[in-house]
Length: 457
Image 1 (tube, rainbow, N blue to C red):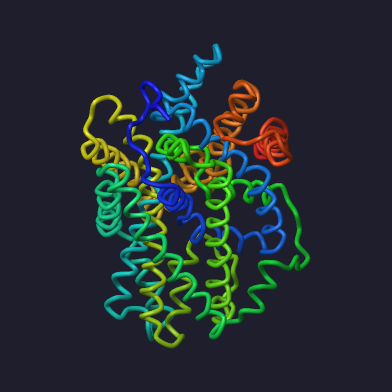
Image 2: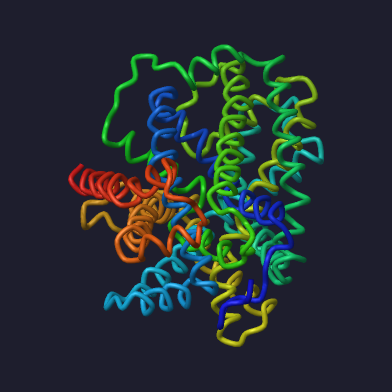
């Protein structure tokens, strides 16, 4: 098929290359770090039910819609939405949603890189034999010492930002696609190995019951908001990262079928992460609802007592590093693509984005240290929220759903139905009808209801 005027000349080399790279972007710390602590905080089974429904009927339709916008626009997110807006004669400034999305990728990376940097530091400590045989006090002192001063977190955050920029600085095939083909299979193999290990050494049956049993679950507005926010975060929708993957997608790729594979891979990683981590927590006598520090304080306590604890800890943090990198390279891609479209070379563009991310990351680093009791928006009723919590919760629970809402309104109500079917491509059958109904009605109603609940509640 002839290349559309003004579209990206960079494409993935194959359908497999697109799926593995986009799945790598979806699979990340959201599936392992965020999923486990959010599921633990919300009591397991009931949260899982709402999360699965939100993933299937809210996040997945948005994921397909965002990919579709990228494919139809064929360029960086801002240029793509501007072109599509003009093509349908809309007076609404669609490109501003893309600009907001680019800002969202930078905000996510600003805390994501800090978490990933600490993961790399912990992996390095485990490689040196750390954690095995440590006392509880030693683990907590190590975590406290790491966060107490900004130097070490800043160093490891800079290392992670540099690694991400290095990969993104290459073209799509050499950088993003090749890195994903190396890291994603390794990630799955490590995760499968950890699940098998947890099944033999941990309380596996209790973990299964926790994740899939209801256990007197109380369904609250907070649980629903967390579940939808997690569903959006775990597949990286709402910040234009998925859209730029759609622009790099070959015309021969069946978008709905490829999306199904990507979402199933993403879900598999989240479930395996739960089945790898929760059995070890229960075996160590640790309750799951401990919050964001689960993988930095609570889980290392488990590594101190299990056989070959240092080796298991290193493998676990290596898994997390791969997961973090596969997502960060996709999150950095949209802003890099926009700068490249403005005439900046790709390596320089990636470096500039990394520098911006690193600068903003200082807010999160300080939130874990001397600013851990500083609540910048307490004056307007947001007491108890640090910079880190404001950025993370604001992006996950407000920003991503609102951007996702904008994307489905564009696809469901502005673009012609026949043009959508031709671009997917998908015949006017039951699957298309269900997806299109979800895009037009289910997602908008659900997201608006959740946002109202968040504002009122």
